[in-house]
Image 1 (cartoon, one colour):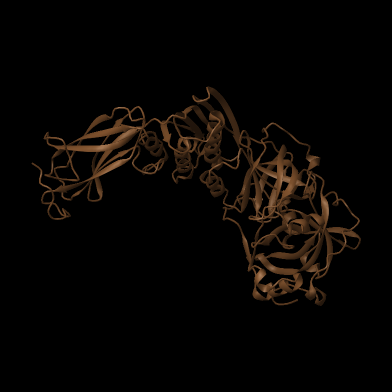
Image 2 (image 1 turned 30 degrees about the vertical axis):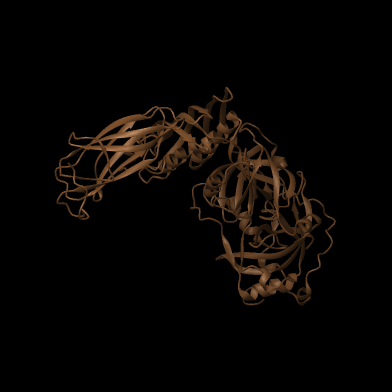
Length: 594
């Protein structure tokens, strides 16, 4: 065995010729017997099982190329193998969704589990893959439910130059075509309503929160009450781990590695690497392996009924307990579209509190597009209520109403404030909270844009004449009166609003007077707080999109502010320099106020 641990026979140097698939066409039943990695030798032939279409596992050939000791983590070996079958050869190598496919070798007349397909080269589909050893996955069956880890993104296994040379020789590739690392295989994730017209920024929100290598695709929905028989879960068969059910069914698709009594282990790698978790364990039906020339082939599958609960999410895979029952968090909505005169009511059931912001965001986005029956500009009014519990079990409640307007995508404009607020709420450091429900009580949308844009800003000092100014020069204690011209989107007559601000008598620095529509910053980014209860109040009082505001900032601090509530969204802004007579930072000469 070479120092880097990859053992290759001399016959491999001219390229591997795949052996014929063994006569066995079904994986062994019952709890598998693992083969220790120390007993694996180069050139050993085995059989793996996976599904490319339907539900019945089909065999593929696997040849063990070698062992990479401590290749995944200290004490976690990596088995390197080359795999072939008609389906695998057709798409150029393993596909996303094969994660968890078991590989067996016959040893002493017994079919023993080598491990599960879980690692691949990052450059695209490959016949050379990494297997998570069987014993590491069997150990998951004995895990308790009290320990947890923190998610850290997709794992990666670095390959030495010597190992890359031997892989290149074994497969007939040039060294340049062998990547410098094996990475966790990409996972197909089925999301209801994710069509080709879904904007990239919506896809980015979904992918960002997954924090794992995924391939999103539009999938079917399934309710939390739909059940499948546990005997559908077999080694090499489809496995889906669900984050939510209902209108928005969100599930990662992979393969079952082993089934023992009332438990199963799948994927061969983590989903989120959360340790103790709560996800839905579901059956699935593979439609096909989609040959994507850009992102690589992936299994396209529909999600079917539940069989239990995924309660462990570890480095070697995920564990499902068929005897457990799921508890979920309802996310509901009522949407009225004036352009189609349609009303819809929606519901999704979320399994993890941290996913309530994402599912609520996407649920209402999807509902607006569906109810309006178009991607379009428009305006909206919405009101929502979030409820939950603190660490001590005491309840909390947050209600917020707002308006939206967009010349491009009113669905996104109506919900992107929400995800920032709910993320801030869940990930704050003051209190460990859980969501118990979320409800879009009413959302009204139309394809008519109703909004104002800030036009001229006239300034009067101490009761003087209103004038258009780029800068003013005032004494400490002066009163600034504003007349802000708001121009409607539909070019109807403009509206004037009045606001008043006071320069502090102690003012010693010059600054700026900003006039703006809405919050005056990124929507949904609320200010600081000292406790969870204070944060709730900050969110409740956070400026809304239908407000015109003004802020007098001198030096680094805000000296005064004002705002006026309007009947439509207000956008745009103006800035006026403010010079304090005799103050530091006055910038020299400034217009004299008469």
